Amino acid sequence: MRRYGKHTDEDDIPSRPNRKGTRPRTTIRPKHEDAAEGMVLTVDRGRLTILVDDRVVMAMKARELGRKAAVVGDRVSLVGDLSGTKDTLARIVRIEKRASVLRRTADDDDPFERVVVANADQLAIVTALADPEPRPRLIDRCLVAAFDGGLEPLLVLTKSDLAPPEKLLDLYGALDIPYVVTSQDELYDGHTAADRVREHLAGRTTAFVGHSGVGKTTLVNALVPEDRRRLTGDVNAVTGRGRHTTTSALALPLDRAEGWVIDTPGVRSFGLHHVDPSRVINAFPDLVPGTENCPRACSHDEPDCALDEWAAKGHADPARLYSLRRLLATRERREGD
Image 1: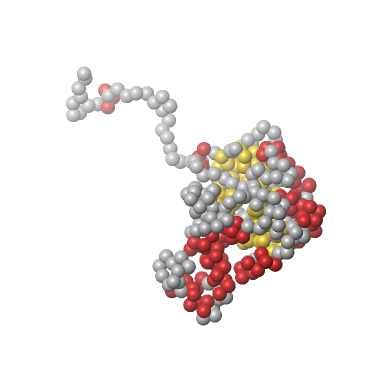
Image 2: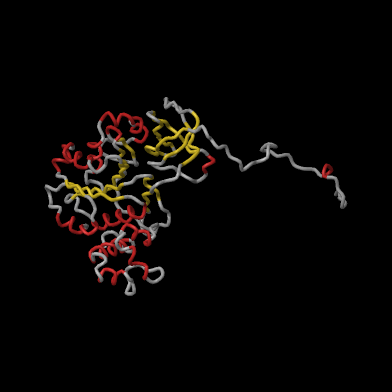
């Protein structure tokens, strides 16, 4: 065995060759200053369909992004082949900062949140008044997710010919949420209902959510003209999306560049494990000042909560406080309880 002294020459010490090459690794990444900007229209098994100018481009996430994933609505930067021709593939090298995020978990015990849509500024909660019966708990949960993610809610009530809307609207009256009521005939005729809904969509990006069977996708198809759907025609072939069903979230442009609608798969539940209750109250600006005297980490539904006195002195409508507490309680109650 060869022994080395205190003044060994490094050249005398044998070293194993680097099997992966001799180029040293670096943490410096290219800036991709010439990258093009686009919007994610849909995601399917790692392939993303992206609108770049007026072209639909297929892309994959670059390795340098690590675990960070792009979702429908994301603004991204791309390099590579941006022609949009068949069998071409670009690379997503940057995901721009999100203005809003609609998130959910599988259930309230699931610690892993899933981003459903990015950069939407409105959440249209589509609910049938009958067949299927309305689920206020699910509506409440969607409202909490909207308030938490920075989206403004819109209630779209369908099938008013089967049941009156007043009872459900009274439940949300104190929240002052805009709403549209449509009948079953209007829903399948499409145009009359679509025109009233479209008034709330101009210039906005609106995500549509709802339980299966409420007519959500039928309404979305009525909102988006056929020629605008052709813009994302390749999306249908990629995702296998049917005309009246949705298997993955899909962004569609409204006519005359009036905005975007994002159709999402029908939901059975809307987990809120990720929601910080302290953020929900930000959707109640009339109640926020009353929290200044609340105990530390106040849940706003306990004996020492300062909001009771705030409402009692006439600074806020007690019905608003009740609505806040009902929404906060949805995180502690499972749907159907």
